[in-house]
Figure 1 (cartoon, rainbow, N blue to C red):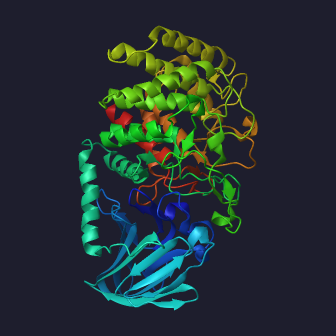
Figure 2: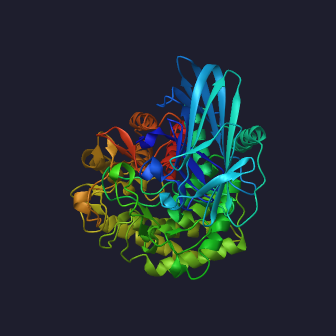
Figure 3: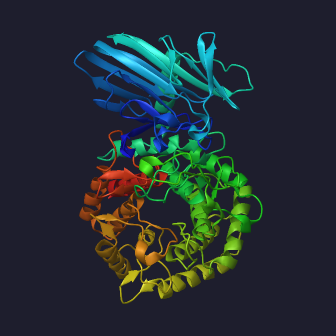
Length: 587
């Protein structure tokens, strides 16, 4: 089975496909990110659905790359007989989702092999496949997929096989299109025109952003493109990752569905996109937020569906053995029902960020912020599950209290700075001071000279590294310097930062995990704020080296196995990269 870092992503801003360095589409959900997968080999094996298109001898490619600043992927194999390139992309969605694969002969002659194994509903449903005119049609229940290609095809052991030869200058297209089975044929796309249009779309999107230069410009641009690829264009929602159940520990049970919109993750992604100059995405997200959280502020959830849906019931797909036998495979996410105090602060901070960066305030948006703040005033001193979504006992998490402070701070500053915005600013400022004093009194351990995970505990937690970034304390405050030293001393593995100490944190789950990549980026930010520029730069550049060959990061890293872990590509990792890079380049 391919490693997580062996995958690249293509997408159409409504769903995405993961393609291995062996030319196999091993994960794809249609028609949306959160739809059942029709290719689920990623979580089991080829029989769960895949589409391989590669030289007949198989094996990993010689090289691959994205074409400039786009999501058009080129994969090349150099063989004794010749060189062949496969171009993969998904055109921006019109009426139906398409994935286009063009086999291009570069030199010599290469024998190619294609094998399409469609399995709907996460590998559990084998479709009826037959020819429909010049197309191959696969149907099962609500799903229909059509394959159009000039290459020869035949059925073999419940798959569609294509064997053909390409020579220099040949271009052999394959177009796979999904549609509801109860509707007519979708309009076919011309593969070459679709390629030109897809290249233009991404190039024009990148050109809308800020001019970026410096040593990290390419890494930042690729991360921004990846974050854009994780947005659901019809609603403005932003998914945390394109996959479900890639493990945080190989063989372990910490396998979660990330194909939903976490308010926290989306807010951080929003900040990264704004920093890159993409205000349109910020506006679309704010509109999504207004719809998703409409109603009683007490009903605010930590996550929602792509369209703002609130019910995300969690279940296990027992017929899938999981990535490298890491079970269970889960769809849905029970954490949606958790109480996480920090999301009020994350949400209000994100809206404030957008406002200060030029996104005009609206009456509806301010009314929402007022309602959220008024509710937070009555609950900020309660215990919660924390940003790591622990399934153990609720606690007074230090990070949660800091983010409650952020909410009061941003709301009071909004009123002071913007005469058109009205609110009880004196009361909010008093609350801000109360929360600040509470955190310093109960969230900082004098003996350890460090902020701790929760009140009355001694366990460390990487989330407190964001304290300087949100303005709670200066980066060179002695308490932050002590915290940095404690985390570096006790909460790192191979120089990279863990989220927390599993043995000391009682998170309600068995097993362990790798190092959460965003936490190491937070350490970069904390070191930078503390004036330790050289250390910050060294750590950041080490983190850059953990990206795969096309610039992608998953959620975690396994220092022992030297490999990526967790769902991929992960928004949390990429927006943290953007933020750290821009801070370092600013000096």
